[in-house]
Length: 202
Ligand SMILES: N[C@@H](CCC(=O)N[C@@H](CS)C(=O)NCC(=O)O)C(=O)O
Image 1 (tube, rainbow, N blue to C red):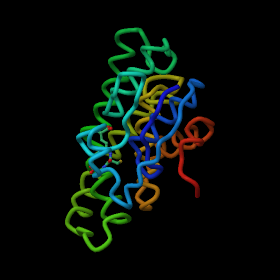
Image 2 (cartoon, rainbow, N blue to C red; image 1 turned 60 degrees about the vertical axis):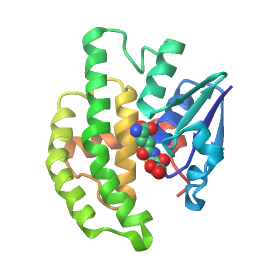
Image 3 (tube, protein in one colour; image 1 turned 135 degrees about the horizontal axis):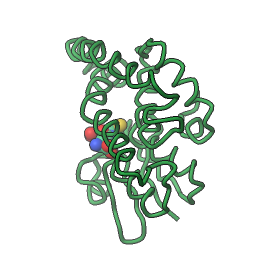
């Protein structure tokens, strides 16, 4: 049984839930109440010194970083449908995972954190910065989705689960990209039960 430290409004935590669900892996969620600052408590910092969710516990292994967790689960359980073994296909999946983490995520955080969660710490400049980044990145995503139904081919992989978790987050701030291929792809993602199950209650 996996233990996942989780917060429902964390896109990083939700993408792990969507894979656990998709692969029918047994797991228990431990809610970290970020609204109350539980991620900053000494007890949680002992588990994850980055004060972030998710953290996965597998026996005596404690793992942070959502992408590392996704890859670990796929490799441990041979989930080659979600993380292909073919070198070139896997490289494409890794490309989008890294793009999501290093390019899209900062824009999502600038926009969504400051629009919805920062309260009195709302930073208008960060929102504008995030929106400018998103204007550059949205066409890149849309072009990446032009050739196939999913990011790397005809079937979804952990790259799709990961990017879609950020797109849901943008939707919370009414900032979803409107590219034709992106909209159609996101609608396809919404038909995946495991992805839907990872989403917070409406
Ligand atoms: N690189 C990390 C990022 C995790 C992350 O940013 N989690 C956010 C919630 S979405 C968090 O816990 N933030 C609290 C903080 O940074 O103090 C991952 O991919 O797991």
